[in-house]
Image (tube, rainbow, N blue to C red; front, side, top):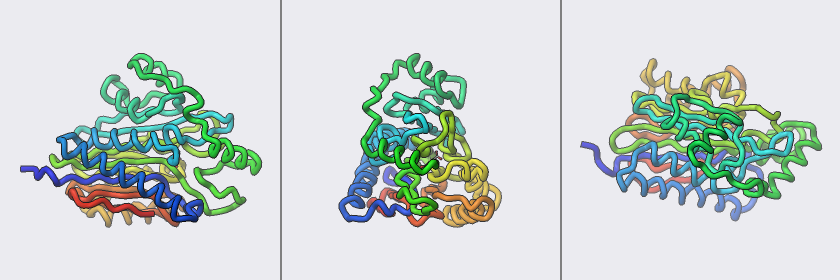
Length: 313
Ligand code: ASP
């Protein structure tokens, strides 16, 4: 019998040096958002919701918070436009839904879920994804919903330096003080089902049409009841080339590693192969929570086996 309090939830809100978090007020702002959204996830679980429902709820709330690079806080591309990517995966049967290069959608994770449940496909992109959103009756959010003064300034800085920047980059040339602000939510429900969701605005000043790891099954997101749920944040190109989320799952499946061993093995592989920059959150099939990152910090938090939430950089 499943114990109703044996659920685990993990969230991330981006990795990097986080040198923009210089004062306690900013730090508290990030951590309190993570903590309160974890509590929303707990509510879903205690009301009998599934891991899938919990990750969709938590990812939607993270998308609604403008401090994170997803949904309304998405960064701007080279044309000053928002293009968002998102994916969700159900570990029960490996069903997955993803969208890439979408705009004017307040919650791309919800559109990804509709791709999973209401279409015969795994991924829809750009205009096709938008038409599908219309078909599903999803409302379009107005342009001004996405354009925060911070994002406009961030793009101006990136253009001045003729470079692609990552969210909350500190704008100094060759700086390592970068933050990759994608959001992610993973969960295991008391029935032992795993689910994962990742959503992002991508990277600042990215080329139009650039798609990162976040909507790619096995790269930025993965869930399989037999192994684990994973969500990644960081330089997407590194994660795509190492298929990092599936690699971590494979360490469990084929080498019988536990959550922390597989996470560490994944981070070692990411570093050894491509000097990858970013991090991952992982919940294994027993509900054990683990995280790893190659950047100085990663905003993340978790509820392990129904316990009190822990939040940290
Ligand atoms: N992984 C995301 C991307 O490359 C960026 C991030 O994590 O902030 O699109």
